[in-house]
Length: 108
Ligand SMILES: [Zn+2]
Image (cartoon, rainbow, N blue to C red):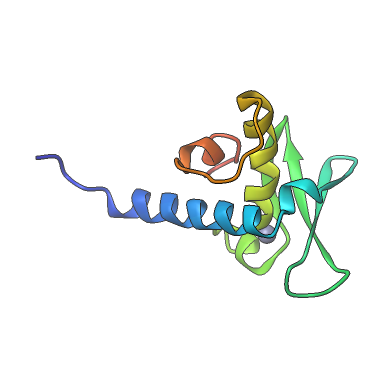
């Protein structure tokens, strides 16, 4: 029997939930690149957007409440799903493994 890693798995679950929420809201198809950052529509405030930084091709920080506290958020998940979908070559409808998203996020 192997020892469990609660902290790591909790973070992974949070990323998976964030990715599923991003997909449910179709966020990966509503991204607008602005220089070194990507604007992701806010789901709570109509017309508003959150800014996700790009760092050397990876997904950096997000200016939303969760992102500012270093927690997984659907905005960064939405940006991370894009290269994942490009590599997979298919339209992504669900994220079975959070690692698929986490590998594109700095510090995830
Ligand atoms: Zn965010």
